[in-house]
Amino acid sequence: MKLALTSPGSNSGETIEISDSTFAREYNEPLIHQVVTAQMAAERAGTKKQKTRAEVSGGGAKPWAQKGTGRARAGTTRSPLWRHGGKTFAAVPRDHAQKVNKKMHLHAMQSILSELIRQDRLIAVKDFILDAPKTKSLVAKIKSFGLDDVLIVVKTWDEALYLAARNVPRVRVIDSSNISPVYLLKFSKVIMTVEAIKHCEEALA
Image (cartoon, rainbow, N blue to C red; front, side, top):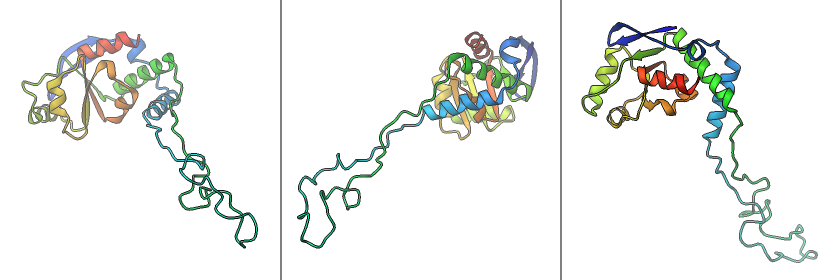
């Protein structure tokens, strides 16, 4: 299939040939949901930690005699019932990652890219270069496309582009090797350079 290249304000008239197997797949919502959920779960820190009664300091001696005091029996001052005691069901660090095999991730990416094209949310450009790493220049270029919420995907990491975009809300710049389902679905529009599209096509083939 052919994909039209866009220049600021209109189509440039040029097209590029893209693979149907990568950019013309059916939308598989259950698979995409599973892959996106797994990615977001893997990003969770999972570092919450609380101490059990065995881990809190103190409490080695029985606080009072078993009988004769008139008080309830107590074997330690670090019982969960006591102030400064350990937690009954203490949280421990854990890994929230979910297993997603390579083929599932591959098909989810193909499905998302195909749907972006069907919804006219993927904008293909010949290149995306700034003269200087200035936020004002980037904002002006994005507005020339009539956009304000956009993901910009380039083939190789562009330091100038990143520096210009890092303080702009609802704009993010990534290279095609770090593209992910979450990034693609998060923004209303995605601008991809021709080199980035070809790189994705090779990686997802």
